[in-house]
Every structure is written in structure tokens, then in C-alpha cells.
Amino acid sequence: MKKRILAMIIAICFIFSACQQQKNTIQDMAQIQMFAMDTFIDLKAAGENGQQALLKAEKEINHLEQLFSTTLEKSEIYAINQNAGIAPITVTEDTFYLIQKAKQYYEFTDGAFDITIAPVVKAWGFTEEQKRVPSEQEIQQKLELVNQNKLHIDAENNTVFLEKQNMAIDLGGIAKGYASDKVNEILKQEGITSAVISLGGNVSVIGKKEDGSKWKVAIQDPLNEQGFAGVLEVEDTCVITSGVYQRFFEQYGKRYHHIIDTKTGKPAETGLLSVTIVCKNGTMADMLSTSIMVAGLEKGSELWKKSQDFGVIFITEEKEIYITEDISDLFTLDEDTAYKVSVIKK
Ligand code: AMP
Ligand code: MG
Image (cartoon, rainbow, N blue to C red):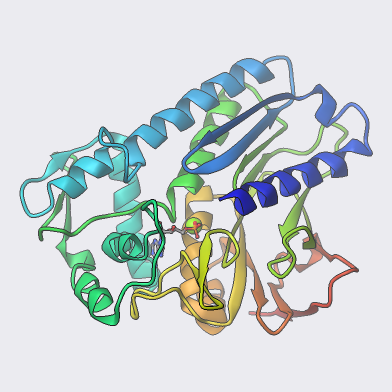
């Protein structure tokens, strides 16, 4: 947890210092920092209405956490999970929308993204106090509960039902991206034309900096906690990263991270250290970064080839960076790193 917060603070400081060179940019922006959705959040908005807009955004994030948390006993997700095998639960629009989206994404990713993975995530302790390596038998038992076909949604009544007892859902792979979309919407409604929203590894920018230049978003070097692999220069988009360094524990010298391969029930081992998605839609970006960590470089590239909507940066254990051609011009490699960069073409 401490490591993650440190990495996030470094990333935010980077955005800050990158903008420092142009005076009257970040300094004049309203700012709110908070801890919610199990992550450090930093919101900045320019303009007269900045502070008021951010207060509304803060309220929305807290509201979404109350809906989506797997551990808060008053959350809608908690109620759905508690009522697995018992009864359908009526939920609000936000929760229904996100679960419906997650079901579509299951199809789109050929099962790599699956919110019914919750019992397995729990067995590894990622949603508990204590992280641990479950036995092979326990993993197999929990995998039997992972079943998208037994997650039923009813659009007429806004209900969600898990058919089998002990099934559960976990929106951890998608909720922060959705929150960034909602914050984006609120800030735009409030007339904000220049802002940076950072929810842990999820960055969303509105417009450009006040001086007219693009935002610089640093991409964490997965092999160096304090360093960056490079920088993306962007406007009006989301830059969302999932990586093996974000949430993990070590046992007998082996690292176990929080992104679970739905086939094996174990942390995904595809040779990828991180996946960054550049996409206008934060919900989609968040889902994709998680699921491409599971799908791997080859299948992830295939997904990209099928779509016009997003760009990808893959960082591998072999110290390679693969970047899709649509975003390659936006990326500058940090010269202190040893990564070899290749461009993926359609
Ligand atoms: P992210 O940090 O966005 O990559 O999301 C990781 C989180 O998503 C984990 O902490 C779990 O809560 C959840 N998760 C892990 N594996 C999967 C998966 N294969 N499909 C959907 N959600 C997952
Ligand atoms: Mg994600």
C-alpha cells in the first residue's frame, strides 16, 4: 500500500513539475486531494469555477465508492454478493450500467475481463486484510464460482442476481475508470476546459494546459519504482495503466500481483509488466488495461486491431516497449531507461 501511494505521489509530482516550467499553469489551478476507492486521488481544475467544480467531483467519487465497494456493508455490490443464490437486488443506474458494461466487455475480451472473478481475488487476499497464496484445490473450488452466465441482469427492473451461493462480483478493474468519466462529465458541465483527474494509475485530462500546450503524463517504469519509462503528451483523453507493481505481495521470492487470469485463477503471467491504454472513454480504458494484462501481447494486439477507439503501450519483462502506431508520436522514451521500443501496426 505504501509503495503504491509513493508511486502515485511521484507520478502526480511529475505532472506537477512538467507543468511547473510554464508559470501560471498548475499554480493557478484549484486542487483537491483525497483517498477513496482504495487509492490516492488528485483532482485539479483551472478556471474561476475550479474549486466549486472539484467539490462536486469529490462528492461524486465518494458516492460511487459507497455504491461499488466490495467491503462496505452498505454498498450495492455488497448487497448483490450477500444475496447470491438468494434473491435479485434492485440497484441504482450507475451500478446497473457498470455491470451491464462489464458483461459486454467479457464478450469483447473473450473472457479475460470477468467481474465474477471476485471469489478468486478474495482467496488471494487482495480484498482482505492479509494477502496469501491459496492452495491449488482452493483455487479450483473458487474457479467453479466464476461464471458470467450465472450473473443475471434485468434491465426492466434494474436488478442484478448471482445465481449460485458464494458467487460474488468485484468492479475493482473498472470502477476507477468509470469514476473518472463521471468526474469528467461533472467538470465539463461546470464549464471547466482544463483539468487533470488522477485516480491512482488512472489519469484523465480535459483540454490542454492553460498555456495551450498538451498535458504530459508520465508512464511508470515497472522495473524502477521511482522512475518513468517515458512520457505521453495528450489532450482530452484518458491514460490508464495496469501493472504488476501496483498491488502485490511476495512469498519465497516470488511476486504475486492482483490481476487474475480467469483461466488459471492465478496472477496473470503473460510476460507483461504493465499495459497502458489511451482512450477517450475511461471505463473502457480501465477495463482494457486490466484485461490486456491477462490476454497478453499477442491477443492484446489483436483486440487493438479490431478497434479504432484506443491505443496501447505494452511493457514486457524482456525490457521491451510495444506501442501501437496511433499513439506512437505522442510518446517520448525516458533516455535513462534501457527499454527497446517497437511500433505495432495494423
Ligand atoms: P486494475 O488495477 O484496473 O488493473 O484492476 C485490478 C483489479 O480488478 C483487481 O484488484 C481485482 O479487483 C479486479 N480483477 C482482477 N482480475 C480481474 C479480471 N481478470 N477481470 C476483471 N477484474 C479483475
Ligand atoms: Mg482496470
